Image (cartoon, rainbow, N blue to C red; front, side, top):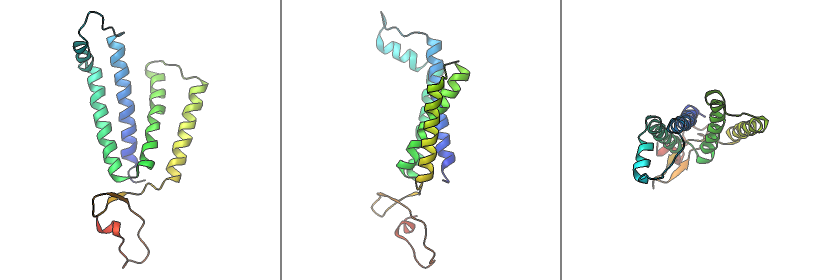
Length: 155
């Protein structure tokens, strides 16, 4: 659980990127490729300020996620990304005045409960590389201080 801050940073930057992309697409208006070179249109979209900022934020989110994956088990870290759905739905309600009806609230609650269950049931052990470079989850040290586990040798 000591990397939970990085996990939540990943979730929030992912959600922020979605909001920036939505804002960028709203400022661009409906897409039409009629009479326009598709490559030029794609470049116009990518380099519009909010879209570009959203894409850069995604890169930051992915870098944070890669860091997290180097530290904890994938089966522990990945489900937390579902919290981005929660953040996006809530912020979209307040920022873009999108609908947040009972079905969506129920879905948000289910996501939150599921994430809590995974956080409680998952080990969240740090990932350590073995001698051959493959990841090996570390295990808690034994009470005997003279015993050194293999995963501790690679630290």
